[in-house]
Amino acid sequence: MRSIKKASGLKERYGLSTKKEGVPIKRKKIAVIGSGPAGMYAALLLTESGFEVELFEKEKQLGGMLRYCLPKFRLSREGIDKNEKKLRELGVKIHLGEAVGKERPLEELAESFDAVLLACGEWKERRLKIKGEKLQGVVHWTKFLRQYNEEKAEKLNRKKAVVIGGGDTAVDCARVALRLGAETTIAYRRSREGMPASKTEIEAAEAEGIEFRFHLNPAAFRGRARLESIVFEKTLGQGREMRPTGKLLEVKADIAIIAAGQLLDQDIFEGSKWKSLEELPEKIVPAGDIANREKRIGAAITSAAEAVEKINKITGN
Image (cartoon, rainbow, N blue to C red; front, side, top):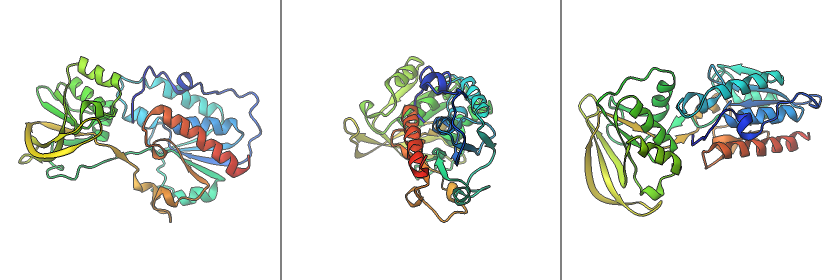
C-alpha cells in the first residue's frame, strides 16, 4: 500500500470508462478476486470487453486497502462508493463478505469460470521475528490503520510511539499516531536516501512534527507485561546499503507500530491443490500488489490492464 495524491475515485484519476453504449454481447465468465484499484479497474475493463464478470470481496465493502488501511485524511471514500455503483450499473455481480479460500476454494472458482483474475492484495503483515514482538503495545500496521479508519483506535495522549519501517505505510502509521495524541518517531534501518516512502509523504510528516531517526534496525522489544522500550542495532551505509555495527541503542516507547512490509495471505490457497502463485495454472492471472514489486496504485492499475489483456488471449476473446 503506497501513496495516493488527490484521489477522488478511480475514474477521475485513471480515466475509467463506465459507458453502457457499445458494450459487446457478453460471452465468457470471469471471476475477479479482490476489489482494490486493480480489481475494480480489471472488472471495468473485462465488462467493457464483453465478459460476464463476478467480483469476490472478503470484506463487507468494496475498496480493499484503499478503504480499510489508507487513512481517511488522505483519501475520501466517496470515489470508491461511486465506482461500486458504476460496476453494478455495468452488470458486474458483486459478492461481499465471501473470502476465497475459506468460504470458496480458488480451485472451485477456476473450474466454474473461464478465467480468474487474482487481485486479492497482500493483507498479511511481515513479522520481525525478534524477542518481545508479542508484548502488549507492539502492533502491526494492518490492525493499527484499520482500527483508526473504523474509529476504534485508542487515544495515545502523551504516549511515545515508535513506527518501525520506511515506506509510505510507515509514514501513514506515524501520522495517524500523531493524530491520536502520541509523540511520534519513525525509526528506519537505512539512510534517509534509502527510504522507499515518497518525498511528499516524508515532507508532510516532517511538517507535522514527526521525528525521523535513521540507521536503526530493531533487535528486541523489552517490557514486563507491556512494551517499555525498543532495542535497536545501529547500522551504517548510504542509500539502500545497510551494514550492522553491533552497537545497540535502547529507546523508550509505549507503543511500537511495525510497518516492515506485507505478504500474500496463504489462506487464499486453502482447499486448493495449489500452494503458491508459481503453481497457479495459466487461467488464473495475478494482478495488483501480488504481481508487482512496486506497491503503488499506478503499478496496480497497469498490472490490471496487462492481466485483462492476457485473459483476452487465454479465452480467445
